[in-house]
Length: 104
Image 1 (cartoon, rainbow, N blue to C red):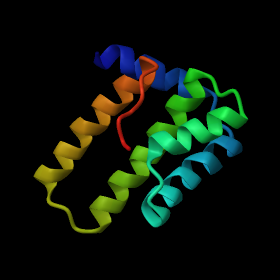
Image 2 (image 1 turned 90 degrees about the vertical axis):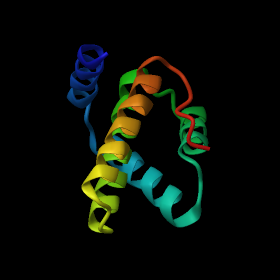
Image 3 (image 1 turned 180 degrees about the vertical axis):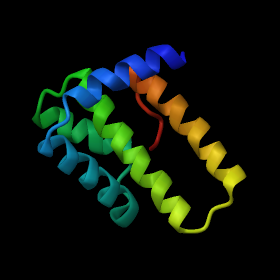
């Protein structure tokens, strides 16, 4: 599981672009400030652009990094941060398997 995820993330980050960074930032903003679920955000942008799996992987990974940092800055305890990290890992596995991330 870890090797598969690490390999997919390496490929995804090799496709990094300003456009994907903007989409990840927008996903975070729409989720935290407007309450738009990440799955819905992904389905909307995927309907407009044909994102490949690596691009989706990159966007979700960056989104989850932003969420983790937001929680850290909010003062969440370390043991709870570890729970968030485990959950993020499970979400990333769903993404690389082409499944919905389950964050409605």
